[in-house]
Length: 266
Image 1 (cartoon, rainbow, N blue to C red):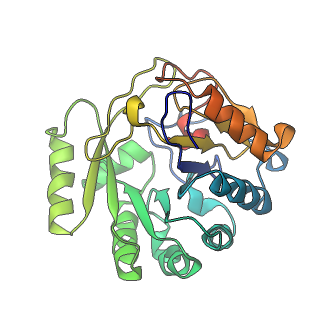
Image 2 (image 1 turned 90 degrees about the horizontal axis):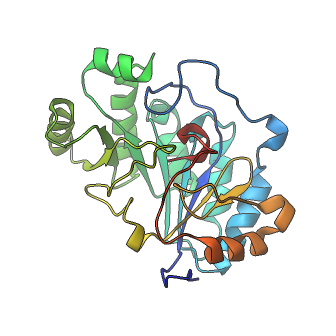
């Protein structure tokens, strides 16, 4: 499956929930967010059915995101349903890591290949300030659980303001080297202002290479993170929504004034 600019679209990112057990300062406000009603959230059958169609169109890589995907009740059942779809070479999850101690082995058994874990500091007090309540020990235990379960390679997503040479980022870098973890540096983004850049250690943010479609937990298919374009898969049907997303995918991102990171899965 190709878009108008001859980019091969083979990567589907699925937000399974807009809820999270942390409230990171760069992701959501301290209070007062508007969450989707439960009736708006896609069922596991809808997500798996859509993924099956997407794979038939050429998708080979699937990532589950949130919010925090592990707060979605029964999410390992969804992992198993997606892992049984023939044609997926890479099934991963982005998580804050706080619940991985509980779910890592179950996720591996269900068919998840690997995880990306968000970690912006290894200082407990700074972590609590960034997340507005988080316990860094939970993340460390989650990282160990992921490694022990074989969810490899474990990749760390480190949000930076300007450079990976910042004090906190350097400390996270040392932690990753000492613990056999891969690290990616993601410059802090702003959807409304259209601020984004290429991920250091990955290809995210490079519009010329973008191979992604994004499905929100409420069933909106977005061809670009930094765009207001979205297609309702329930109204259009799965295949038509995918075809239109490929047709409408912009050459380069601009702004997104309709979503937030907690409901689109950055």
